[in-house]
Image 1 (tube, helix red, strand yellow):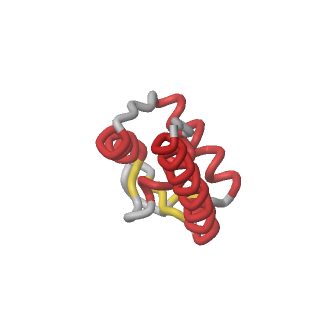
Image 2: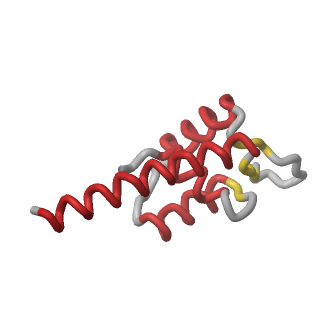
Length: 95
């Protein structure tokens, strides 16, 4: 599964980050390299949905943070992924 939105939400779960830091974090924890267009497209969609928020800053780099709604959405998606992993693992053992 390589949905950039869930990767961005997971990256922001431990605190605010700017775009490049999000991209590098995703590369490290998921082994997935998101291009700038993919990353910033996902950031724009997540911001429109209210799942992440831009943080006011004087820096030229724009940090983002997870909103309460984004945190809830991430929890829901992780629970679903956990169910998929448990089902797939069980079925592999039975095969």
